[in-house]
Length: 191
Ligand SMILES: [Zn+2]
Image (cartoon, rainbow, N blue to C red):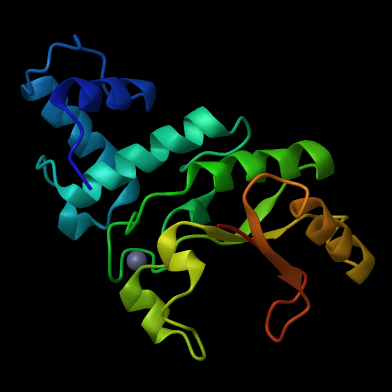
């Protein structure tokens, strides 16, 4: 992916609440401080610095995509919108979220109530470490989410309701539940 223009970086950092300076395309001390502040919130300590990297670029874009396409979700509030490896293999945004996936996630929230993400992004390193995972998993492409909805997906009938609803949404690819190790979660993905 391409890096955001410098003005866009400042705009996205402003939207995320880390930058309060002018959107002038000049990455000075204020912009660098904003990058550092955001890294401190999301990265393991060993990666705290003011450098604008491709991984940080993806994190910033994902933050913005979640803001633009959902009302009830955020990188901070929904930990698993970051990579599941928790900083072991990547900086939390190995890939960009598909925007239709996020829009559909919001529609599920609007229809069924508060949603807990049980699985979101997986970087290649983490995916490999999972027993039985497949390298083409849509979780490694930003196109799949596993979710749990308290009071809804606790029952098989509830899970099936969510699965059925997913197939009414734009670009729905697969939705399923009740496979081994899935517990009360429902997997949904987009094309
Ligand atoms: Zn990772």
